[in-house]
Image (tube, rainbow, N blue to C red; front, side):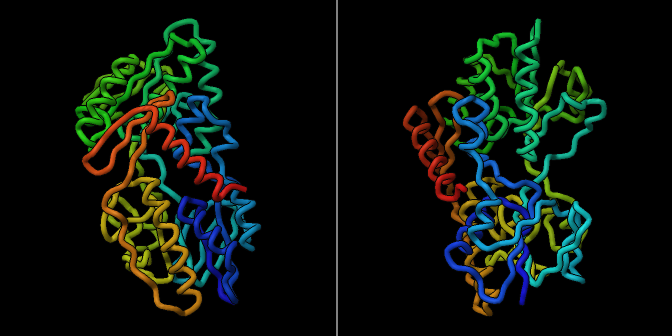
Amino acid sequence: MRRLLLVGGGHAHVHVLAALAASRLAATEVVLLSPHARQIYSGMLPGWIAGQYAIEACALSLDALTRRAGVRFVQASCTGLDLAAQQVHCSNGDSIPFDYASIDCGPVAQALDLQDSAGHALPLRPIEGLVAAWPGLLQRVRQANREFRLAIVGDGAAATELAFAIHARLEAEGLGQARLTLIGANPAPLAGFPFLLRRQAARLLAGRGIAHRAGRVVVAVRADHVQLDDGSRLAADAALLATGAAAPAWPAASGLATDAGGFIRVGQTLQSLSHPCVFAAGDVAAYADARPKSGVFAVRAGPPLAANLRAICGGQALQPWQPQRRALYLLSTGGRHALAAWGGLSASGAWAWRWKDRIDRRFVAQFGG
């Protein structure tokens, strides 16, 4: 019997599990390796921060999905990949051999100097870490008897959406002592988005007193400040690290073909360019047609990945997949309002938030345990 090993419980692998629940693979043992028994749907994380959702409403049960799919679940993370022996090394000390492997473990936080910042630096990734740390940070703000300064490191979509969400939560609780600052290398938040959307976001941020420290990169976080690349310091009681995605070290170390950032290079069939027995999707993959690191493309990669894994296990021909060139982005601004972008077009309003809410709830309901 052959073995298909799914490394990580990302958005694409959720589709694979659903496909296996509908129709299992013949003569194939399927194993899912993931450090967590659930996946927090990233699209709903800002809504949870803002207090709009319970965390259970944002979670997909990998445990339940694997049971329905007849997949063996190993709760551990991947620490290394031995391509010669075709086995994955796990954080629990075990090694799992495979005939075929698919990697959808997501990215990691970009490296920063975090010396002496324990309890003050909160990385966005892994999301479970932020979910565990957020209540403590919120309690620190509640107990502060002076201005509480929160630095949000990054000024992309994730950082900006989280800034809006945090502001909404603090305002709902009457915590006016908090001061939020986005710090990023760009002249304005949401670089790469349509001009009108960026202008609207800047107006909303300014109107809510959320500052933006432009043209700067945070190089270190300390207990009472963040260090910027020009040598200056910005006072901060805590820092939320929402910088761009970085690749884990082990794919490149294993000998898999990777791009300059360490992300796994795959062809249109989602197979590794160097090792056809390995597939990759989601943020950890560098697609043949480059796309942004976004949950939108991870979700869209799920069905073609599921089809090609089924095909290779059954000795069938694999089919190419080309990611869409345009994607719909819906960014919550904290309340029941959102920004929308499609290609060069943008709009905003309560209708955009309702649209986003329906999409997010439908995704979780579709795969929920």
